[in-house]
Image (cartoon, rainbow, N blue to C red; front, side, top):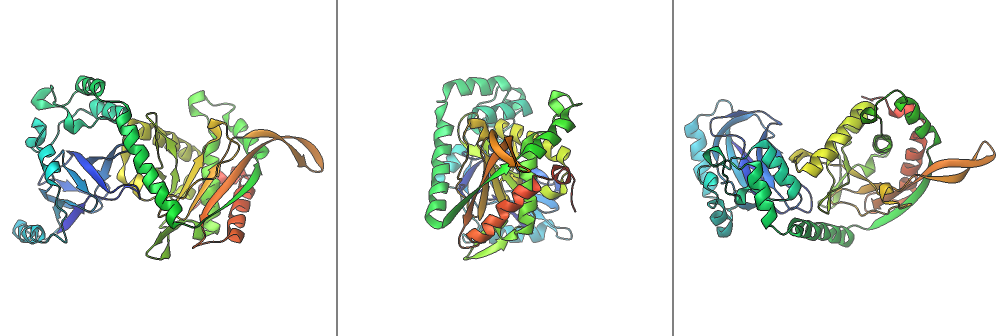
Length: 392
């Protein structure tokens, strides 16, 4: 028997609201399949299953608010009989240590929508996307579509009745709690390095000369790739601090800080960045930003970044000294690209320069290693053609 639990989608999440099941008992699922949609203070998240199996029973009703770790469903493994799994489910229910129980208030909320009472909230894809953009929970909307399905018009009408600042305020409180924890528990140190970008910008200009506006390469993927390759050289910056010790990341999954239109931010991951060429990484980054702002991220994208990259250059700041997102141990920031006086081959002239900064955990690394990391970022950005190629 496999227990499917509500995953933690970041250090700032302790609960979520089940919006919709995308599977039913008897459905076969594979690792990576999206099986549920869960609402957090930041967005509606597609939650994937991490095992192959057959859905035996769904234990949480749509609309219920449950803590992280709650057993949401039970899967039957190959070779198991329904009778064997049923006996294990009965034992699971009898063990409060193994199975979190939703609050009474959450149970009452789960019965509110008519569709939820039937086992799931029916909602059209367009309505779900719009609800994510507007910060409206579909579980609270009475659908007017076929079989009580929530339509786009239902979402728009509900949004008009909700205070627009409510989700932004909740997100701000969530972010504040996570950052307060970070500054309280993590002994930060900060370093900064000016990085010349003449070679990188010339490379991008050459690659973009024959491309349409929608196909042009951005600078951001090169910056993210430079960080990813640098932490391959200095792996103590790529991972987590858990139970008093450093745990290396299983790969280089760069979280990218993305500002949301309604306020607040998320930092979903670009997975296995070194294995992406520049065109692939550019497409994936644009897709990630679009889905983050539409409220359609996946659980894996929020739960497993191994280091975060943030840029406030579009806000006009020269440098940023960011706060580490626990349990990660490092974060790299980039300011705006500016024309500065720069010495090249003994001559002074204008050059595009960006300030790269590092916030790191002194329990895992020190300033000497941090300086080497930023030096590696600088060096790699002088060889953009190499950065543009995927590595094993």
